[in-house]
Length: 116
Image (cartoon, rainbow, N blue to C red; front, side):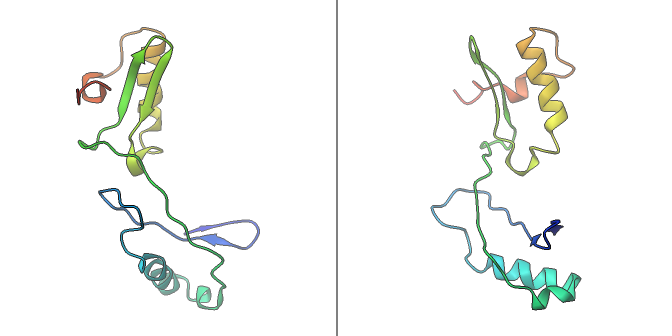
């Protein structure tokens, strides 16, 4: 749960391992709210303004794709829900690619062409 200065709060989230055209389970927002009310009972009186879902791009092997696709194009995607957690390592790897420097760790597990 993330409270905002305007008095609203963001409650979430769920995670599905595959893509579907609709949320995996339409009851998820209500279940999240029910769980949040157990933690913060005052939320029971709150008005639910909206709910939404979005995609968290993830690769089949659950490792991000980080590297040069061609001259002038470096990608860093596919982190799923771990993008913020892995941000510093991703930045280090991207910098090593852009500046053509030795990386602090192996690039091969994140090679964009590993699925080819």
